[in-house]
Length: 226
Image (cartoon, rainbow, N blue to C red; front, side):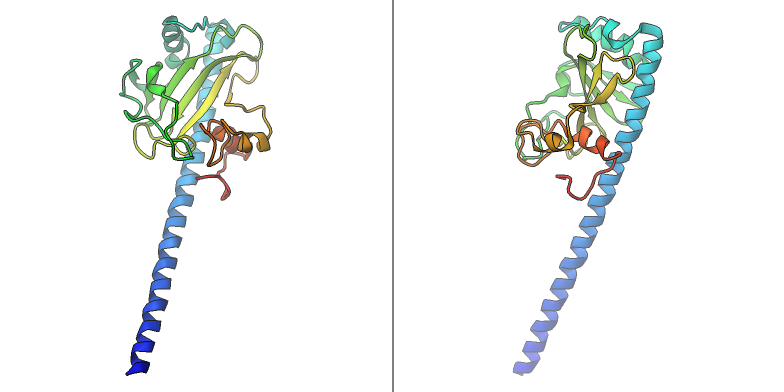
């Protein structure tokens, strides 16, 4: 009888290990698939926006000539000289929650992020991506930042985490590269380890993650803080 129960417990133990292993593999596969999908969406989005800004530059000149301000006029600039050149399905007024989640975002550290894209001019694209644009001033100086662009790859849907479905880009006053990930000029080490904006599990707001993915040829590796 003792041998029977011993063998029984061994069998159940092995079965439990197998079940846990299968569950781990399924979760790992799902995570890898989600990473691949997110990186692909960002890569395609980046190419589309670069083309849209190029079209706007042909009509309106470099972004530094678009008339950016920090007041209500920025909404008009964003709409006429940026959103106009995108495949927009819905315009969302400032301070609404039509394009971005009501409860905002957490960062990779699982704490509430200070970023609130809903307070800026926003749109939803035909592919479900939502975009919000925060003007940063006139950007008359060459290579200065005209605006921050917040991009949610799946709109108001979860997980609503900065660095997982919300990413940050910039429009800059540049002849060649007018649209780049936030802090794209920093090294990979600085992008990862910065205490405030680093793409890691401890920073306050992981705004550098789009640049990390871009520098990795639009791929999310296993060491990415997913």
